[in-house]
Length: 517
Image (tube, rainbow, N blue to C red):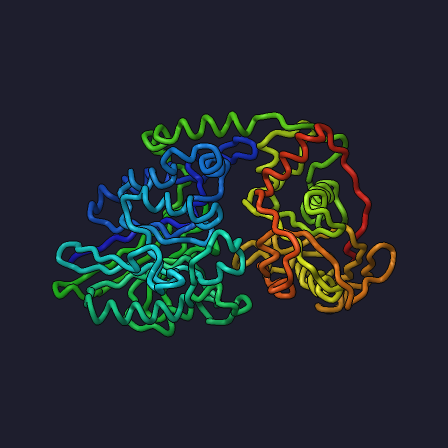
C-alpha cells in the first residue's frame, strides 16, 4: 500500500502577507502562511504533488506595484512558487490582466511548467504555454496532471491582452486530452487541474447558474471517464467531495486554505481509497524566510500606498453597502464622473465591487484608491440603444429580492456559490427608478435621458469597464456592440490622475436614480 498526497492552491491573487492592504490589519490570508502548511505536509510526505490552479499573479497592491514599477525584477509570486518547489501551475483568467508580456515573463521565470491544454496559439492550434500535461513518478506509480482553463476569458479580457490566442472549450479539450493521456501514457493516477468551478450543485446536480460554459466542473466529472481527481478554483468556494467517483476540491481564495487529497494505492498501483480536505491558515504562523524573500517588494509597496494624492471635500465614505446600491451615493457618482470625464461622454456605469469597499477618506492616498478600485480594469465606450440600456438596468435589478416581510435583500444567486456584488451597476447621466415589487424583467419603471423618456431605438454612447463591456456578469446586451473609444489606461491610474490634477474633489450627489420596494 502506498499513499499519494496532492496539495493544491488556487486563486491566491497576489496575497503573500497575512494583512488587509486597505487598513494593514492582520488577516487570515496569504501564501506566507500556506508555505508553513506545505513545509509541515512535506515532513509527512516528501514526495507530495504540489499544484497551483491559477489566478496567482494579480490581485493585491504588491503585485500591481511589482508589475507597474519593478518590471526588471523577478515576479514575486513566481519567485515564491519556485522557492516552494511547485510541480506545476495552471493559467487562470486573471493571469492575463497585465498583458501577455508580463505573463510571458512570469512563465519564463518559472522553474515549473504552466499548463493549459485548451489555450492555444491561434495559428498553430497548439497549446500556447507548451505542455498541456506533465508526468510525475512517485514510488513506482505514474501520475499524470492535465491543466485546463475556463474558456470564457474572451468575454472579460481586453482583446490586446489575449492577441494571438484561441480559447477552446474546456470540457471538450479535457475529453480529448484525457483520452490521449490514457492511450499514450497509461497513468496509474490521472489528475485534472481546472481553473474553473462548478455549474451545478455538487450533491443534486441542479444548475446553480446560467450554463454559459464559464464553469464546467460538474460536466467534466459526469461526462469524462478516467479522471481520478479534479482540482478546481475560480469561484473562490470552499469545497471537498466526490462526484461520480472523481474526488474534487476547491480551496477558497487569497491563500485562506490549501486543498489536500490523499490517494491510497495497492501493490498493483490501483486506487483503493480517496480522501479530500481543506487545511486553513487560521492560527498558522507565516514562513518568515518566504516573507523575507519579498520584503523589499512589500516595503516599496507600503510606501507607495501611503503616498498622498489629494483631498475630498464632503463625505465619500461607505458605511452601508446595501444602502449605497439603493440610492445614489457620492463615491459611486465620483467614479462615474471620472469615467465620463476621461471618455468625453455623458453616460456611465460602475459597481461597488464588494462589501469591504470603504469609500474615500478626506485625505486620499493610493491605499484608498486600491481599496475601492481593486481590479486592473480599463474603460470602453460602447454605442448602445435605449433598449440595451433598459435591458442592462433590468439585469442589474435582479440583484435584489424581497423577503416575506417585504424587506429588501440581496438575491442569493449574487452571494452563492460566489459573491458577485460587482455585477450590479449604478448609472450616471440617466434618470431611473427600479421597483423591486415588480416581477423580474419589469422593474424599470422610469428611464429618462436629459429630462425626457429614453428613446428605445435611440443611440447613446456609454462608458464602462472592459469586463462589463465584454458582457461579463450576464450583460449579454453589451456583447458585439460598436466600440467608439478604447481607453487603455488602468482605472487606478485614471482615478489617481484625476484627483492629483484637481487636488480637491467635492463630493456631490444628484440623486439621479433610486431603488424602491
